[in-house]
Image (cartoon, rainbow, N blue to C red):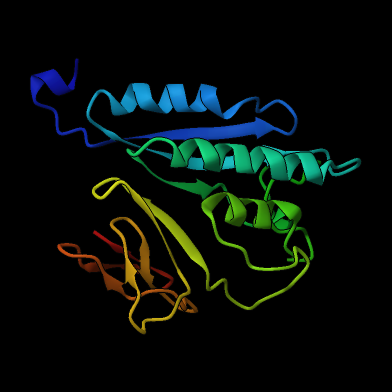
Length: 192
């Protein structure tokens, strides 16, 4: 309705504050995202976390649940990406929980590789520590394809909405045409 009156709505961001073991099948998320896509907008999960109790965590199920959401996004050409609501359980906003993909010691959890595997890439052991993540996966709706790059500015191209710079960033610094890398702050620039 709002778009029919000329409002410039180009996308819909969904929050995904979920609980491990309650995520369900990818098909329900595909149906929901496709309904928005059918309205002519891009969709994205802009706040994803999947809580598991820190006192008795189920990291295997959490990994499966993260992979389910990634799989659903990949099935909808208008799904342009997923952003977690933080990156480490050390600084999570959810009390007594371990909802993110790095633990409190900044070690990768099983969910980290489950996400990469669902995108179609892999980084090795879930317990490997790195200073910066150099494998990046993004979905672009313009070409309706998934692109994975190995990072660095040498020949790789970042898709629309992707990060393209910032302190400590080691991924692609060139944006796909017609987008340009726009400075946001010292830690983040984005292809817009």
